[in-house]
Length: 579
Image (cartoon, rainbow, N blue to C red; front, side):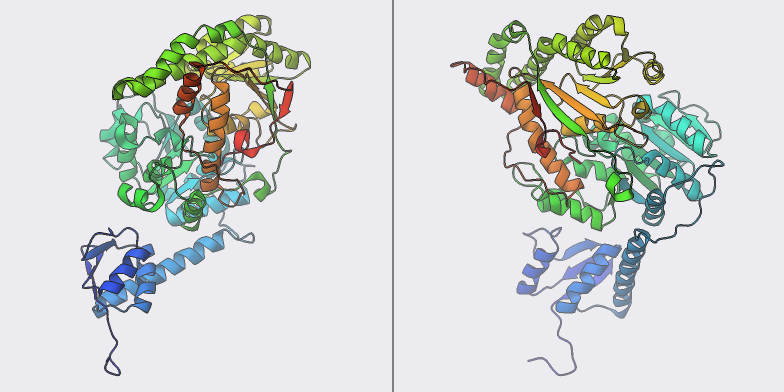
């Protein structure tokens, strides 16, 4: 029986080497502690260690209210200060996001230039928190937000911007147009004497050669444009270099409306470069969020958590009063050359068999070979029909953005549309050539811009010329499709946007359309957890679906189902906005 006036304690807690160490917990309290702090290994008997930060202080203070632990007065004061700091931070971040919040003025903008209210809110969140993934819907001006932040926060200069090669010119032009920031575009993948500037714009392919410079702490902030290119983590040269840059900078900003291209586990790798604390280490993340199949166990919960931590900030056009007419997504089944598809079916069936019965390395290589071969054959089989479809749109007075993947398919499109003199923005052209070709399209010198599915992320200006997008080939990832659509569905677009998905009943199109629903579902729930998208319970990967399709063909061929000429794509899990 407890002595009156003496508080019962259930263990000890102390500060040790910037960590909270919890020891001698009574068994039933230890069980409860492990339930409330998932980062603690379930098999451990203690002592337990938790990092010293504001979040931990708030949680521990709450836990100690129910299960008091013995601690020194000095440590008690430190824990209370941490909890109060947490409450103050949350209150300030919530205040910034209120509609009537009045942000401080931003100096350094050119005359006549303004930063919108929602952009200023993001700037203040970043200034206060120092680490932010800005996931605003495409077209809401994430680049302007980044530029406004660099003007508002002198401590963030000089800044390193890491972007895709074709975006270097656009970053320089935009920053120099609306700010007084001095911008230098990095020209080499190896260090050289840098001129004085406020912003240095790197191609992501260059940063591996600048690692030693990053370690000198010359840069104060790192801005990652489309950081999903780092989704494979630090195992690559660019990933390792980006990690070094993040370690040696104070402010981190990621800019993307589509952080997840495939499955939600990519979010840990991406957030590691932006905020390496919010999701814990890899073991913590997988224990808390990932199921036995490598999928996010509860995507909505993860999305909600990132928002509540203010690590992810995302607004839609409808949220900021810039809502555009709804995008029309239309699936069109087009004619295809059956001989092209049939010509590869025997080999495809052999690869499918090897992908299931061969040795481990053989299985993976066979599946990849099957994917490459069938997707190209599918694109080639319908290439002429796609070109004819585009020609009809141009003859009707439309400018068209045409998307594909394979060079052999582009060659057919170029031949079929030769008199329209299409512009090219693919993996073959240099960065300067891409810029010239997009300028030619925007200037009205041609009505067709052929673009690679994974080129042109963040490219601006197309919305002033085009409102029709044609997907002549498909990508396995719905995020790629949505990013393409946002290149024309953005601020400045004066017409309703229509996206046509030209598909066939054979080849790779059917399994890709099937998989797109699974990936779109998971990605949308993480980034937009309050948008109602039904979960699809199917763990089959894209290549496995393709393998299964061709294994089935080894037996008996089924009759192709008849399709209506045009089917409205009103199902959000296929080609709806995934993020």
